[in-house]
Length: 304
Image (cartoon, rainbow, N blue to C red):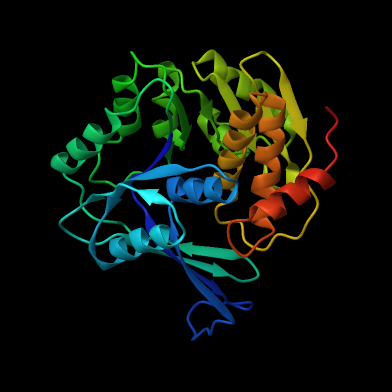
Protein backbone atom coordinates (compact mmCIF):
# COMPACT_ATOMS: atom_id res chain seq x y z
CA UNK A 1 0.00 0.00 0.00
CA UNK A 2 1.06 3.58 -0.64
CA UNK A 3 0.75 5.97 2.30
CA UNK A 4 1.03 9.74 2.00
CA UNK A 5 1.73 12.10 4.88
CA UNK A 6 0.54 15.70 4.82
CA UNK A 7 1.49 17.32 8.10
CA UNK A 8 -0.22 20.62 7.28
CA UNK A 9 -3.14 19.97 4.89
CA UNK A 10 -5.39 22.74 3.67
CA UNK A 11 -8.53 23.79 1.92
CA UNK A 12 -7.33 25.50 -1.23
CA UNK A 13 -9.52 28.39 -2.32
CA UNK A 14 -8.55 29.02 -5.94
CA UNK A 15 -9.90 32.28 -7.35
CA UNK A 16 -9.64 33.50 -10.90
CA UNK A 17 -9.00 37.26 -10.83
CA UNK A 18 -7.62 38.20 -14.27
CA UNK A 19 -6.66 41.78 -13.31
CA UNK A 20 -5.88 41.41 -9.61
CA UNK A 21 -4.71 44.64 -7.97
CA UNK A 22 -3.75 45.21 -4.32
CA UNK A 23 -5.52 47.88 -2.28
CA UNK A 24 -8.84 47.77 -4.14
CA UNK A 25 -11.87 45.47 -4.28
CA UNK A 26 -11.26 42.58 -6.68
CA UNK A 27 -14.03 40.31 -7.95
CA UNK A 28 -13.56 36.71 -8.98
CA UNK A 29 -14.49 35.29 -12.36
CA UNK A 30 -14.08 31.69 -11.19
CA UNK A 31 -13.55 29.91 -7.88
CA UNK A 32 -13.11 26.40 -6.52
CA UNK A 33 -12.46 24.93 -3.08
CA UNK A 34 -10.39 21.75 -2.96
CA UNK A 35 -8.73 19.62 -0.31
CA UNK A 36 -5.04 20.36 -0.65
CA UNK A 37 -1.58 19.83 0.70
CA UNK A 38 1.19 18.07 -1.15
CA UNK A 39 0.63 14.56 0.19
CA UNK A 40 -3.12 14.83 -0.34
CA UNK A 41 -2.50 15.92 -3.93
CA UNK A 42 -0.33 12.84 -4.44
CA UNK A 43 -3.13 10.60 -3.09
CA UNK A 44 -5.72 12.26 -5.35
CA UNK A 45 -3.52 11.94 -8.43
CA UNK A 46 -2.66 8.32 -7.65
CA UNK A 47 -6.40 7.63 -7.47
CA UNK A 48 -6.88 9.26 -10.87
CA UNK A 49 -4.16 6.99 -12.27
CA UNK A 50 -5.69 3.83 -10.81
CA UNK A 51 -3.54 3.38 -7.70
CA UNK A 52 -5.00 3.44 -4.21
CA UNK A 53 -3.37 5.01 -1.18
CA UNK A 54 -4.12 6.00 2.39
CA UNK A 55 -3.74 9.67 3.33
CA UNK A 56 -2.23 10.34 6.75
CA UNK A 57 -1.57 13.60 8.58
CA UNK A 58 -3.34 16.01 10.89
CA UNK A 59 -6.69 17.78 10.61
CA UNK A 60 -8.50 20.20 12.94
CA UNK A 61 -11.76 22.12 13.14
CA UNK A 62 -14.43 22.58 10.49
CA UNK A 63 -11.84 22.94 7.73
CA UNK A 64 -10.31 19.62 8.72
CA UNK A 65 -13.72 17.96 8.57
CA UNK A 66 -14.20 19.31 5.06
CA UNK A 67 -10.78 18.03 3.95
CA UNK A 68 -11.67 14.53 5.16
CA UNK A 69 -15.15 14.71 3.61
CA UNK A 70 -13.77 15.73 0.21
CA UNK A 71 -11.39 12.78 0.11
CA UNK A 72 -14.14 10.38 1.16
CA UNK A 73 -16.41 11.73 -1.59
CA UNK A 74 -13.66 11.01 -4.14
CA UNK A 75 -13.20 7.45 -2.88
CA UNK A 76 -9.81 8.08 -1.29
CA UNK A 77 -9.05 6.43 2.05
CA UNK A 78 -7.68 8.53 4.90
CA UNK A 79 -6.62 7.97 8.49
CA UNK A 80 -6.00 11.51 9.68
CA UNK A 81 -5.09 12.29 13.27
CA UNK A 82 -7.52 14.87 14.73
CA UNK A 83 -5.94 17.85 16.50
CA UNK A 84 -7.96 19.39 19.33
CA UNK A 85 -7.03 23.06 19.02
CA UNK A 86 -7.16 25.37 16.02
CA UNK A 87 -8.26 24.53 12.50
CA UNK A 88 -6.69 23.21 9.33
CA UNK A 89 -5.43 26.05 7.21
CA UNK A 90 -7.10 27.76 4.28
CA UNK A 91 -4.76 28.61 1.42
CA UNK A 92 -5.82 31.29 -1.05
CA UNK A 93 -4.55 30.97 -4.62
CA UNK A 94 -5.22 34.00 -6.83
CA UNK A 95 -4.91 33.31 -10.55
CA UNK A 96 -4.32 36.59 -12.33
CA UNK A 97 -1.70 37.92 -14.68
CA UNK A 98 0.68 36.42 -12.13
CA UNK A 99 -0.18 33.83 -9.49
CA UNK A 100 -0.42 35.03 -5.88
CA UNK A 101 -0.76 32.80 -2.81
CA UNK A 102 -1.71 33.44 0.81
CA UNK A 103 -1.10 30.38 2.97
CA UNK A 104 -2.57 29.86 6.44
CA UNK A 105 -0.65 28.64 9.47
CA UNK A 106 -2.53 25.51 10.52
CA UNK A 107 -3.27 24.09 14.01
CA UNK A 108 -0.87 23.60 16.92
CA UNK A 109 0.26 19.96 16.76
CA UNK A 110 1.31 18.43 20.10
CA UNK A 111 3.76 15.67 20.99
CA UNK A 112 0.74 13.46 21.66
CA UNK A 113 -0.54 14.09 18.13
CA UNK A 114 2.85 13.14 16.71
CA UNK A 115 2.84 9.96 18.80
CA UNK A 116 -0.48 8.94 17.20
CA UNK A 117 1.04 9.47 13.73
CA UNK A 118 4.12 7.41 14.64
CA UNK A 119 1.87 4.57 15.84
CA UNK A 120 0.21 4.46 12.41
CA UNK A 121 3.55 4.57 10.60
CA UNK A 122 4.91 1.73 12.72
CA UNK A 123 2.36 -0.56 11.04
CA UNK A 124 3.99 -0.14 7.62
CA UNK A 125 5.98 -3.07 6.27
CA UNK A 126 8.75 -3.75 3.75
CA UNK A 127 6.40 -3.76 0.76
CA UNK A 128 4.74 -0.44 1.57
CA UNK A 129 5.57 2.97 0.12
CA UNK A 130 5.60 6.17 2.15
CA UNK A 131 5.41 9.68 0.66
CA UNK A 132 6.47 12.60 2.89
CA UNK A 133 5.50 15.87 1.25
CA UNK A 134 5.28 19.54 2.01
CA UNK A 135 5.98 22.07 4.70
CA UNK A 136 5.92 21.56 8.44
CA UNK A 137 4.25 24.04 10.82
CA UNK A 138 6.25 25.81 13.50
CA UNK A 139 4.69 23.66 16.24
CA UNK A 140 6.37 20.53 14.84
CA UNK A 141 10.11 19.74 15.11
CA UNK A 142 11.85 20.61 11.87
CA UNK A 143 13.57 17.22 12.09
CA UNK A 144 10.23 15.39 11.67
CA UNK A 145 10.93 13.82 8.29
CA UNK A 146 14.34 12.64 9.45
CA UNK A 147 12.82 11.32 12.68
CA UNK A 148 10.33 9.32 10.62
CA UNK A 149 12.99 7.93 8.31
CA UNK A 150 15.17 6.85 11.25
CA UNK A 151 12.25 4.72 12.46
CA UNK A 152 12.35 2.88 9.12
CA UNK A 153 16.08 2.12 9.06
CA UNK A 154 15.51 -1.59 9.69
CA UNK A 155 12.71 -1.84 7.13
CA UNK A 156 12.78 -1.89 3.33
CA UNK A 157 9.88 0.55 2.98
CA UNK A 158 10.47 2.86 0.00
CA UNK A 159 10.27 6.48 1.17
CA UNK A 160 9.74 9.47 -1.13
CA UNK A 161 10.50 12.96 0.17
CA UNK A 162 9.25 16.11 -1.54
CA UNK A 163 10.42 18.97 0.67
CA UNK A 164 12.78 21.93 0.65
CA UNK A 165 15.81 23.30 2.47
CA UNK A 166 16.75 21.61 5.75
CA UNK A 167 13.69 19.33 5.66
CA UNK A 168 15.18 17.76 2.55
CA UNK A 169 18.85 18.05 3.41
CA UNK A 170 18.35 16.37 6.80
CA UNK A 171 17.00 13.12 5.29
CA UNK A 172 19.62 12.52 2.61
CA UNK A 173 21.88 10.29 4.71
CA UNK A 174 18.84 8.11 5.50
CA UNK A 175 18.73 7.02 1.84
CA UNK A 176 15.31 8.11 0.54
CA UNK A 177 14.12 6.12 -2.48
CA UNK A 178 13.21 9.33 -4.32
CA UNK A 179 13.48 13.06 -3.75
CA UNK A 180 11.87 15.67 -6.01
CA UNK A 181 13.16 19.22 -5.73
CA UNK A 182 12.50 21.70 -8.50
CA UNK A 183 15.46 23.47 -10.09
CA UNK A 184 15.10 26.57 -7.90
CA UNK A 185 14.93 24.48 -4.71
CA UNK A 186 17.93 22.44 -5.83
CA UNK A 187 19.90 25.59 -6.56
CA UNK A 188 18.95 27.03 -3.18
CA UNK A 189 20.48 24.01 -1.43
CA UNK A 190 23.85 24.78 -3.00
CA UNK A 191 23.68 28.55 -3.38
CA UNK A 192 23.62 28.54 -7.18
CA UNK A 193 21.19 29.39 -9.98
CA UNK A 194 20.20 26.39 -12.12
CA UNK A 195 18.30 27.42 -15.23
CA UNK A 196 19.22 24.69 -17.72
CA UNK A 197 19.01 20.92 -17.68
CA UNK A 198 22.76 20.61 -18.15
CA UNK A 199 23.36 22.84 -15.12
CA UNK A 200 21.00 20.69 -13.01
CA UNK A 201 22.68 17.33 -13.68
CA UNK A 202 25.84 17.64 -11.53
CA UNK A 203 23.83 18.90 -8.55
CA UNK A 204 21.29 16.09 -8.89
CA UNK A 205 24.23 13.67 -8.81
CA UNK A 206 25.62 15.49 -5.78
CA UNK A 207 22.37 14.76 -3.91
CA UNK A 208 22.87 11.10 -4.81
CA UNK A 209 26.39 11.20 -3.38
CA UNK A 210 24.81 12.56 -0.18
CA UNK A 211 22.50 9.53 0.07
CA UNK A 212 19.42 9.91 -2.16
CA UNK A 213 18.84 6.89 -4.41
CA UNK A 214 16.90 8.66 -7.15
CA UNK A 215 16.61 12.39 -7.84
CA UNK A 216 13.80 13.84 -9.95
CA UNK A 217 14.14 17.56 -10.71
CA UNK A 218 11.15 19.42 -12.14
CA UNK A 219 11.79 22.57 -14.16
CA UNK A 220 8.27 23.77 -15.07
CA UNK A 221 8.26 24.83 -18.72
CA UNK A 222 11.90 23.80 -19.13
CA UNK A 223 11.17 20.10 -18.67
CA UNK A 224 12.75 17.79 -16.13
CA UNK A 225 15.89 15.81 -15.25
CA UNK A 226 16.00 12.40 -13.58
CA UNK A 227 19.16 10.91 -12.07
CA UNK A 228 18.47 7.21 -11.46
CA UNK A 229 20.25 4.95 -8.98
CA UNK A 230 21.32 2.85 -11.97
CA UNK A 231 23.69 5.66 -12.96
CA UNK A 232 21.63 6.78 -15.94
CA UNK A 233 20.43 10.36 -16.35
CA UNK A 234 17.24 11.12 -18.28
CA UNK A 235 16.29 14.52 -19.68
CA UNK A 236 13.23 15.79 -21.49
CA UNK A 237 11.70 19.03 -22.61
CA UNK A 238 8.26 19.85 -21.21
CA UNK A 239 5.21 18.60 -23.13
CA UNK A 240 3.45 21.30 -25.11
CA UNK A 241 0.33 22.89 -23.67
CA UNK A 242 -1.13 26.01 -22.08
CA UNK A 243 -0.56 26.44 -18.35
CA UNK A 244 -3.88 26.82 -16.55
CA UNK A 245 -3.06 26.11 -12.91
CA UNK A 246 0.34 25.14 -11.52
CA UNK A 247 -1.02 24.09 -8.08
CA UNK A 248 -0.30 20.40 -7.59
CA UNK A 249 1.81 19.94 -10.73
CA UNK A 250 4.87 18.82 -8.76
CA UNK A 251 2.74 16.48 -6.64
CA UNK A 252 1.25 15.04 -9.83
CA UNK A 253 4.78 14.38 -11.07
CA UNK A 254 5.50 12.36 -7.93
CA UNK A 255 2.26 10.39 -8.35
CA UNK A 256 2.93 9.80 -12.03
CA UNK A 257 6.46 8.60 -11.30
CA UNK A 258 5.16 6.12 -8.71
CA UNK A 259 2.39 4.93 -11.01
CA UNK A 260 4.82 4.39 -13.88
CA UNK A 261 7.39 2.65 -11.70
CA UNK A 262 5.05 0.30 -9.90
CA UNK A 263 3.19 -0.56 -13.10
CA UNK A 264 6.30 -1.45 -15.10
CA UNK A 265 9.31 -1.54 -12.75
CA UNK A 266 11.08 0.73 -15.25
CA UNK A 267 12.73 4.01 -14.29
CA UNK A 268 12.39 5.13 -17.91
CA UNK A 269 8.62 4.72 -17.85
CA UNK A 270 8.44 6.21 -14.35
CA UNK A 271 10.15 9.38 -15.57
CA UNK A 272 7.93 9.63 -18.63
CA UNK A 273 4.73 9.18 -16.63
CA UNK A 274 5.93 11.61 -13.98
CA UNK A 275 6.69 14.34 -16.49
CA UNK A 276 3.39 13.89 -18.34
CA UNK A 277 1.31 13.73 -15.15
CA UNK A 278 2.87 16.94 -13.86
CA UNK A 279 2.36 18.73 -17.15
CA UNK A 280 -1.20 17.46 -17.56
CA UNK A 281 -2.14 18.91 -14.17
CA UNK A 282 -0.51 22.23 -15.05
CA UNK A 283 -2.70 22.30 -18.18
CA UNK A 284 -5.87 21.56 -16.14
CA UNK A 285 -8.07 23.54 -13.76
CA UNK A 286 -7.24 21.04 -11.03
CA UNK A 287 -5.36 17.74 -10.88
CA UNK A 288 -5.50 16.01 -14.24
CA UNK A 289 -7.52 12.88 -14.93
CA UNK A 290 -6.05 9.67 -16.30
CA UNK A 291 -7.14 10.34 -19.88
CA UNK A 292 -5.37 13.71 -19.95
CA UNK A 293 -2.14 12.14 -18.70
CA UNK A 294 -2.26 9.24 -21.15
CA UNK A 295 -3.06 11.56 -24.05
CA UNK A 296 -0.07 13.73 -23.23
CA UNK A 297 2.10 10.64 -22.80
CA UNK A 298 1.14 9.45 -26.29
CA UNK A 299 1.67 12.88 -27.89
CA UNK A 300 4.99 13.86 -26.32
CA UNK A 301 8.19 12.76 -28.03
CA UNK A 302 10.93 11.38 -25.81
CA UNK A 303 14.44 10.90 -27.17
CA UNK A 304 15.02 7.70 -25.17
